[in-house]
Amino acid sequence: MKLHDPVWVEALKKFLRKENPWPISSIVIDRTTPFNPAKFLGEGWSIWRGPANGDGLSGDEEQDERSLALTEVDLSKVRFETCLRDGEPRINGEEKLKRLREAGHIRLDAKVFQSLWEHKDKIPESWKEKINGNTRFIFFDGTILRSPYGGRLVLYFYWLGGEWSWSFYWLVDVWCGGSPSAVLAS
Image (cartoon, rainbow, N blue to C red):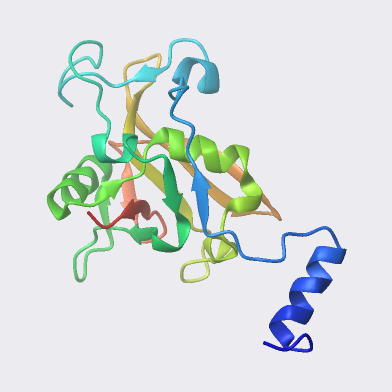
């Protein structure tokens, strides 16, 4: 490779501007401190426990164990899945969750969400792209949260107005093509 190669020239320009000259394709997930919903979202928030039709307070936490085992995520391998079938404009969140499980996808969890949120500079530029002209809302269904009022929710973030923002969404609500889940192939 020659020094006047356009890739090297662009990398040198970025380095001189104190930018990362090489694309970041992975993020380390610090599993020594688990995701704490009460600390991140506020008092009364927790991880859902037990069956979906229960009260969310007893039983096993509803998290994708395969995602919890990840200590690094290659962001170039993250796929966005809506789980919509041909001609289907929308589904509810519980149906989407069921389809994600049936497909065998590794549903990225809340700690992956938190790691990306705390290191927004590592979020790939392509994740800002709109879907059919609409903002893309990227969901992290590997952790099901319980609101202080007993609702089942998941976290998501989105690019709008030149910055990243985040929120949560109820699984009983309607989900469309602009609401993909961040997953890895199993």
